[in-house]
Length: 380
Image (tube, rainbow, N blue to C red):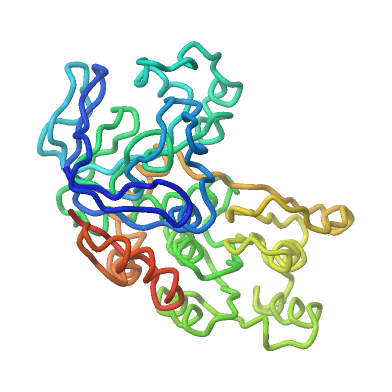
């Protein structure tokens, strides 16, 4: 079949000779790919990898699969074939796939896998599979992904979608679930106000996730005008340019004044940028007992932090890591009920391309014109 393979840094290639996926375990199924989005993580692998992909010559900790592998983990499709123990879906069903791989996935990769009997990690024992000690992803190093014609997946990661949900919109369920998970674990309540730091794809998805949770006021801080405009179109209550202010403290003061009629500070903040200034803003712009949530994937570098910045007003700081099947189900339900506006979802899709054009019109286009695009979808 056709697919786009990751070989290493600055080396991804289209091929029409990729091995077809097979059902090797009884609860696996094969999905015909409809659409697959290109994620920021994919771009990081291309520019700086391997990160999630195994190092050259090495096998992934869960599967022992090595590169090259097909990329792609934000996808929708139609079930083509199911194993004998699959009960949740049948051929012809429209589905999305929760793309994580964790301890329970080892059973799928028994052949030549020296790690097949590794003990289940403490996170998976707790049911927190999204923070598995060996966490990996379909299309990001564990096994072939959806920048291809077909993919094999385990039933436990599959969520059926109504056929009324267009398959291109369905490919957005994965990035929306990243944002939904962050809002869900922060214990956000209907009517609460929120600050979103950064209006890239995940920041914009966070606006929709907050709307799905019936947020009150949503303020977005973003230096790029084109991104602020995109945030406004998605329904942000207010947008803020941090570059308009000569000092950090002045900017944070103005930002807090936008939180509510009293300017008391935000109940929640969600950092989708991951730079030192947004880390500090995410805490300083909160009101008493506020919760700062980091969604961004940071480089392996420390930041300056003063514990009294949280202690004095008993603020909270936490991280959010990817998603679970529950988040996929709740996002689909929110779209179905109109809590997440499907017309706003359509605004996230800025280009659709053929599989053969993934490198030039997908990866390189996003790298060279990142402010123009939100999400580029690929179809085989």
